[in-house]
Image (tube, rainbow, N blue to C red; front, side, top):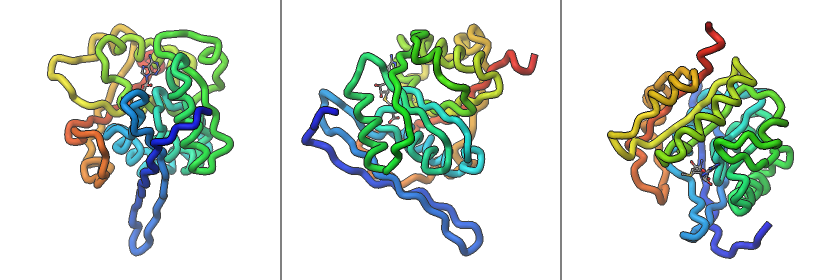
Length: 227
Ligand SMILES: C[S@@+](CC[C@H](N)C(=O)[O-])C[C@H]1O[C@@H](n2cnc3c(N)ncnc32)[C@H](O)[C@@H]1O
């Protein structure tokens, strides 16, 4: 792994009160503060990690894959909540895969696997993945040119794992963007999850990235399974 000097550790605490009892989880994320690498925790990641934390009972002993993981906050929360996690990022960007590995090291997660999965490519690594229960994707729908490739990968994974769910967050960057036609083309269902349902609208983050107010959460499933 390349030794990068300008790494800043960012701390995140997830908590929940059940009666008088406080449940909490601390995660540390090494961010690379360099425009060339640009590896930050995006607002979407914080919201998806909060969803994972509040739904941690659904993660215990489940097989979870994170797509476009970057510095991997949601995947690490899932691993800390008892899931068997595989983190992935673009196979052509080894520095991004290094970020995934670095986050695992910092959070003492030696059993998390890191693989290169490039959206839209049905590569041997994608073909050889074990079966999955939950697929995480935070801010992976951010570049309209990539939307179809993201959905090709998602659709491939859901055909192989028809009961699996994609938990994903995205940021509304333009009113003109829509994935509705692509969801239909790739036989996918989508449910929007209001942020208020899991306190995703009340996160105090101190993130470097602006715009957390426009984050949305959705769950994508395979239409074929109910037909
Ligand atoms: C906006 S960042 C989000 C990172 C992280 N999920 C988060 O929310 O903090 C997008 C991520 O997608 C990855 N990515 C971009 N293009 C990709 C591709 N074609 N295949 C796989 N991953 C890609 C980037 O390397 C980056 O980690």
